[in-house]
Length: 484
Image (cartoon, rainbow, N blue to C red; front, side, top):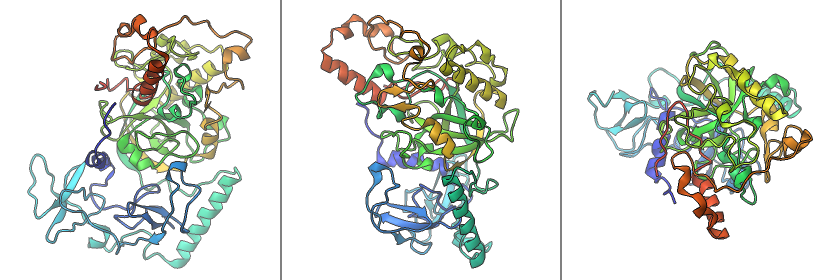
C-alpha cells in the first residue's frame, strides 16, 4: 500500500498557488484562518474549528448541510478578521501571509514555489529575495481586504447583485457574480489524454467495485455548452480532467454532485475557468471540472497541473493506463488505436473524423475531439491562465452522478446502460482474461496464475487497483513514470 504524504509534503503542494508579490486573501473553499480576508466581494472569513476557516457571506453556528457529507461537522462561525490572523513561524511557508511571527524576520521569496521568514536575504542563484508583505503592511494605502474601506452603499449594491444572480442561477436563467476581468492566475501546465480508464472521482460510486465497468464516460469528453442549456461565463467548452494535488487545494473539497477523491484531497466536481494564448483562439474560455487525480509522484503533477480528457489525444508511447478496447472492461466505445490518433500531433491538425460515429456515445466522443481541435492549441503542453469559478449548473446536470455515472457504471446517452442494447445489438462476448495491470507492467506477469487466485484475492487485487493504479490517468505529453 502506498504511504500517504506527510503533512509537511502536503503543505508544499500548495506553494505554487501563492501570489509571489504580496500576501493574498483566500478564495472560496480555501482556508482563510491565516489571512482573515476573502477575495470574493461581500464574503467574510468565519472559523469552523481550530484547523479551518472559510469565506462566506454569513455563517450560522452548527452543521451546514451544503457541505460535502464527509465534511459536515459543526461551524463555530467566529469571525476572523485581519487583526486575528497568525503569521508564519520559522520554516513555514509565508507567501500567502506576508508576515512573520519572529521579531525582526521578514517574508522573502525563494522562487515562485517557496517563501519563508528570514532575518535578511541576499539574492543568489536559488533565492530571489523579493520581500512579500501583507496588504496592511504595505505603503500604497491599500487595505487588507478589497471589501474594507468600501462605501457601504456600494457594498450593499454588490451584495444585491450577487443575490440576484444567484436567484437567476437557481431559476435556470443564467447570470453570474464573477468579475471575469480579475483574479486570473497564470502558469497552469496543461496536457491531454484519453485512455478510457475510469475517473478516480467515480471509483467510490461503483458499489460493489466492478473493474469491468470502471471506464471514462463519453459525457466527460469536451462538450459544447450551447447543446446543453447554454454557457454561464461565455465559455466555449466544458472539459473534464485529472488535477494535481496542488491544484486540488485551490479547488477545495469534493462537491456533492460528482463523486469523491479521498486520496487526492477532494476537488471532484469543482471547476476552473481557463484560457490560453498558445491557441488559435486566445479569447476562448473553457470550464474544466476535476473528475480524476494526477498524483504528485507522476512526472509533472507535483506542480499545478491539469491533464485534460480529449478523445483521440492519448499517446501510446507514454500512456500507462490505456484500456480502450481492452477485455478487462465492457464497451469502451472506441478502440486503442482510436484513442491515440492525435496524441503526438499539434491539436489543431488532428483529423477527428478517424473516430467512429455509429452510436450516440461515439458521436459524443468524436464531437468532443472536433470541438477541442477548434480551440486550436498550438502544441500539447500549453500554459493556461485560470481562476476558480462555481461550476455552471447546466454542466453539473450533464455530468453529475446519476446522469453520466452511477453505482453500476457509465450511463448511456441512449437512456439505457449498454449502448449496443439500445441499438438492437447484443453485448460482445468476451473471453475470460486476467485483469491487466497498467502499462508499467507486462501483461504476461499475471497470466493464467491470476485466474487461479482465490475469489477473495481477486477482490483484494481489484480494490487495490481501484485505489492506487488504474484510476490515475497519465499525461501523454509529459510521459509520466508512475513510481512503485
